[in-house]
Length: 482
Image (cartoon, rainbow, N blue to C red):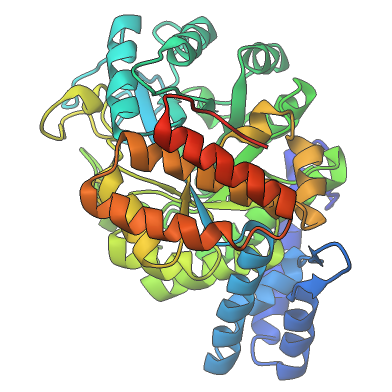
């Protein structure tokens, strides 16, 4: 029997079933242990230092106790601390991105995804490089600077060479003042050699959702295709790190397995990356199973309520304080509003989950991977964020300045990230306001810029940022960053 070892590169050891079951038992026994819960909450709180803030984070066991806790006032305390942590390390910035679906050809048999090979009702489509250019122009015309490219797993239709060519095409398109400055990649688990190729092509973050960490359930949900290999899939991040990609993004599809099990496991995965490679996950995504062609979420009996979902996000922020937490347009405006206050730091906007969807006047549904709950335009999302006290950020400076992996984490952990990220966010927001925003969004945005500039503590940085913002407003000069 495999034994729990967070430093191991064997999935059965760093995501250890016995350890998870023991954790859940411990959490259940202590879910109303006020003394222990207070101790864990105090450990999670951000501590002020001479240079900023530090956070200890929580172990998977400690975080699982909080997730199991049923005491209303303690749950509210979790939410407050989660917001404190998010503000301490990321400020009121919310990073904006969009998914770009390249191809829905897939050889896997995943039971929860409409792209599964046996689905004969969904039209199969793969974008040409010319079509990708048109999609990118449409995304640039909205104001996007950061994309997450998505593709089914098919070694014939979607080989690594196709993905690399798509990345090259995306980076090459400059339309008016538009440019995609960061391409994150969400493709199937692959080899160290292929991860090296992605690194050389300029990948931002490599994202791969585990879907479920419960091995028995995983094998049933992935009955056929290369994704059936649980260990190869679960060990993908280690190969990505070995291939030189130091920004990786984890994710669980909540609703496939019992949420407490999945939560403990994804935190263990984060602990493993820290233990084995010295740097935790750049992002953690928390999608829920949604309706899609040939997929009925009611078929899975582990769906979670909005309130439990909020608790999961808050506990994730407490456990892994420095990670980016991502909520997509799978979720409604109302749900996203609640989650933004408990630790979310990245959202998608104006998303279409169909292959080639951005160039269509009407949202196509026939090739969607899932139903989009939040169907507002990017301009509407930006305006909504600002009305609720957030700064929409299109910044990609850290990636382009080489502040990735442990360099990003050390900057974030010392609290120094605000000295460059806040002005960078304001400058990229100015680009959006000048080039793409509606009159209402412009009006709100310019007032926010004026107020937020005053909050930059370093006078030199504040002066330079103010000058760059005026340059953006009064000329075609773009892409200033610290």
